[in-house]
Each structure stands twice: as structure tokens, then as C-alpha cells.
Image 1 (cartoon, rainbow, N blue to C red):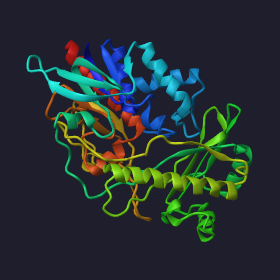
Image 2: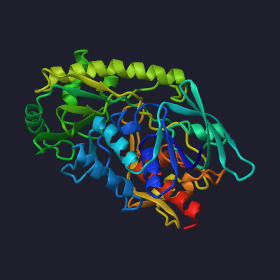
Image 3: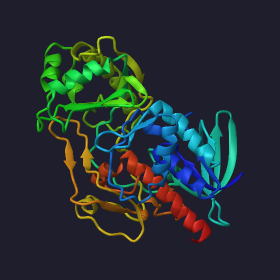
Image 4: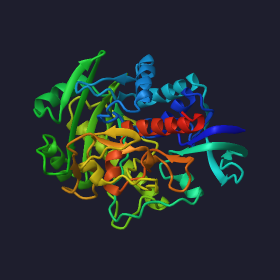
Length: 424
């Protein structure tokens, strides 16, 4: 089999790259190791997608996503004009529908076992493993959107120098069986800070958002409740590290929980498979306590239950590839103009720490541009990356890893490949 492009990884960046490439007429194969598309936004339950100022650069995929999502009542635009409130379960169907609509070939339960470079024309020879079968494929271009740069590893590409700093991972979950009207009424009365807690009624459903962390630089209304729960041993102190609640479209009695944050032991590296596995187990243990805490302390949660635990650990940073350009913190704080802009953002440098009062949230004064060179391997000009493995330093990656930016990264890579294939 021969393709113009193989996209490895069917997460947010990968789905976008494969969809836009196929829409442009590029013969594309999307290879995903699991049985579902969407990655963090479906399997990881990471909703809503955080709002950014993209300057409408490479947002065609996202515009189409909203159209398809509305067919399935899988999207809501919240009161802060954030259109990224999605239903993770329904998005699994939405992404399938999108890729079928542009005739993109999708291969689930598959991963690469061998990749070599053809000396004749510089294309890639790929061996794919699908359960007990091996498939042999040729492709002119590759986009690696795997979260750990698996294709770059196979091709012996360089990665950024290891940074001693690290970000804590999370493991999200959903709680069902909630009387959301009762909870929303109590919450609005309990917390008057509308920068933290908001509620609206739309589409015959209550939508809400609230938060509380162990950082003391903000006067969280929920802090006394968490403190009491720790004192009474309902929670452990580390369970209070980070806590956010969001409503989910078409799930009127269900709430998404952005928690728990998994505190790593000193010296732990989340890239170590044993560290990763321990973090998953620790996360599920914390979820059990947090769900019981909500039932005990929040009105409307009396009959609640854990409805879904994320199928994947929410790792914020692990590997960062070396591209033709490495985006830096200075490029965010003091934005530059680039000739070939892949995407724009105004999202802050957002570093989730392992200790209290040590989180970093540093804003840029302006919307900043990210060049396409951050998505192209320094070793192979027909090898691209997109997603959290983008060529960036530690601080910059903490701002670029958002789902909205990943959508634009995948689209930018696809459109740049289109230009090269058809000499546009």
C-alpha cells in the first residue's frame, strides 16, 4: 500500500492533521494504537477545551468540528463565549463521522514496528503491527502526533535536553446521578466570586464551573470545606491539590472533575513505565476519596456515583522533539513575527507543580505566533510532529500543549505537506 501521508496518533492533533489532509485530497492513513479517536478529549475526559485567541489561523478543523458536534448535541458554548464544551463520549462518534466524510483511511489497534528511509526517493517504508497481522506501507510524509514522539524515536531523531523540572499529571473522572439544579443553587450562593464560579441554564440543562486548589494565592470559597474534609480524614492533603468541576453537554446529571492531580515522588520520571503505572493506581485511589467527599459535602450529590474514570493518565509533558526551530519562553513573553505561522495563541505558561503555592501562570501581553518550523524535524524534512511533543523549551511547551493549539498544529502540518506535494 502506498500513501502520501501517514499520521501516527489519533488524538487531538492527529485527527485534525488526518482530516484536513484528506479534505485537501492527500491520500492519508491515520494509525491509532487504541480503538477510539480523540486521545485526551475522549479517552482522557479533558473537557472543556480551554479557550485561546487563535487569530483564526488554521482553525478550519475546529470550525468543522463544531458543525459535526452539533449534529450529535455534543457541544455547548458557555457564557464566556467558550465553544469548547464537548461531550467526550459523543465525540468518539463525531471524529469517526468527520474522517469518513473526507474518505480518510483509519487503522485502529495498530502501531509501527519498523520504519526505514528509502534511498531512492526519501520516502518511508513502514511495517505496521495490527494484532497478529503485519502490514507493509510506503509513504512520502509522516506526521508524528504520538504523545511521546514514538516515530521520532524509531527514526533515531534527537529530543530536547532533559529539564530537571516536571509537571504533575492528572487523572480525570466523571460523577453521575447529581441533582445539578440543587447543587448549582447552593454553589452560586456559597461562592460569590464570578471569576471562579459561574452557572447558566441552557438547552434544558444546568451548566456550571467552579474550582479550588491548595495554592493560597487565591481566596477559594471551597477551601474551608476541603480543610474540614482533611481534618476529618475524608481526604488526604494531597487530594486538595487541584479540583475543578465542569458540566458536560447532553449529560444533565453528570459533572466532569478535573482532579486528582498526581503528586510524583522526588526523582520520579513519568516516562518511566513503572512510575506511570503507579501514578495511575494512585490516581484511582484518590478518585475514590474525592467522589465520597463530593457526596458527603455537596448538596445534590447524595445519590451520585463515579460514572467514568479516564482511560489514560493526563501527562502534560514528557518528550519534546528537536525541530527546525525551538520555540522558547521569550517567544511568548516578547512575541516575534514569523514568515510561516503554524498557529497563534494567547494561552499563558501554565505549569502544574508537585508542591503547594508553586504553580506558575505567566501571561503574555499579546497573542504570539508559532512558526511551522517547530513542527518539522531537524533531521528529515518530510517528518512532522504535532501535539505536546512540539519543538519547544519546557516553559513554552507549558503554554502550547492545549487542545485548541493541538488542533491547529495538526492542521498546519497537513497544509504545509499539501504545499510541498502539489508545489502550491
